[in-house]
Each structure stands twice: as structure tokens, then as C-alpha cells.
Amino acid sequence: MTPLVIIFLILLVLSGVGLVIFILMHSGKGTGISEAIASSMYSTQTGTSIIEKNLDRITIICAIIFMVSLLVLMVIFPHGTISQG
Image (cartoon, rainbow, N blue to C red):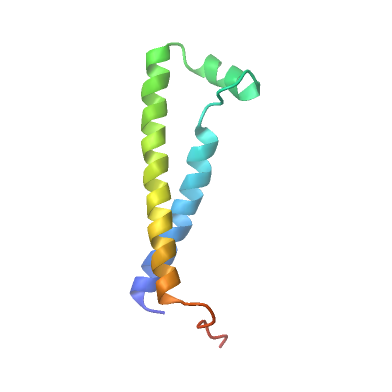
């Protein structure tokens, strides 16, 4: 494997793990358990909105990195070109 492929594989894995973590960090919008936990952690509404906006930005950046690295790897390894040996 070339260094470029290794870099894109690392980016794919890191952005995938980042997506899972940052999506799970979003507070719920309903009245369930996640809303109770989120409301106890944040005392003011302004702090919550700033944190949510930054969390949204980070999640979007991770999603873009994930999609770009996935598309690049799809171009580098078209269907049926990975050899087993």
C-alpha cells in the first residue's frame, strides 16, 4: 500500500470514530433520559446553544472528512481490485 492510501485509511477510521462520538454527544430534543441529563449539565440556555453549535460544526467537519476519504478510497480501489496475498 502506498502512503497516500494509508493516510486516507487513517482519516476514514478517525473520522468514523469521531462521528460516532460527536453524534452521541448531542443532547436529545425530547423529554427522555438524554434531555434530563443534558438539562442537569447545563445551567443556562446560552451556554447550551453555543456548545450545540460548536458540536454541530465539529460533526459536520467529521462527516465531510469521512465522505471525502471514502470517495477517494473508492476511486483508488474499484470493485474487485484488492488482491488477497
